[in-house]
Length: 417
Image (cartoon, rainbow, N blue to C red):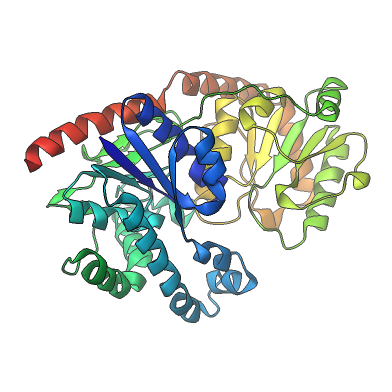
């Protein structure tokens, strides 16, 4: 049976789907993963078939024009510019998936539900965040860390669904008619009158299932790639061996307006708190000559290798980095930028495995110094983080997701016959 996986995003948004694809392939499925062309070698490294998606809109969103639009300036003009780019991605997704027997897709890829409808095959929505399953118990995580009461919490999911797809409804319907020969579609997440199964690749120990979800929602545990042998650079190993375990500090793919200022805050806070730090270059392109002997510039290292060797982790709160830090059992401080990052920061704090999150714009020498001291001296936080890590390590999210997909495909396929 042939399964197509459609996803777009950064490395953190693609890697879990490679892990899921690898699990499906080991279970006997023929898997094709379609995403941005720059990930072809990464996907092929794990023996999965690759198909490219044109994702110019991602580069546009990261430009100065895109950042202004995300802040509310010129958003309508940006949407007009994005439309033909999204149409290209939809066309590529159809070419990648048109011979598939089932579709797995991230909602940013947009085409999965429509292709499954055209082909008459099962499909699954898959993501790392429960943003498309309404509940009374917390507001849509994309909105940050709000809890507005049962009615507004649940309403926030309907509003988010409309915000995600309503601007593109006309374009989607034109594409459905011209490319798939389908009538206009509904702005919902149903297929053939039934809810599309949702697979959420995070741990129930991090976010327990709310009691008002139905049986179309499946929280599987995180989707990890198998650990591989990695040889650290000699200078990194030397730094790790030369003193107490350092604190990891990195903000992933987030673009900083003033990386030099943030570097000064981090280094001064490390000095004031008596900590050693590893600075990930993803957040600034810093020069090693700027650093004192208690700091190390990191260009790249697998989180599953590095985090167990650190005393604590400080990051932006991306779902993947949060997962890696918690799995390693390390106290965590989240310094969120936007989107779901404040949500994960709040969960870290509520679980007792880290201090209250500090938004990136509010970081100072004083509050970061205090947080570093708490991360490394609070025994209760350390014990809770270790216990949570041990629980997460007992889960096999890929195996569970593969079981759900296998069972659902058999049931749906039998029904369609």
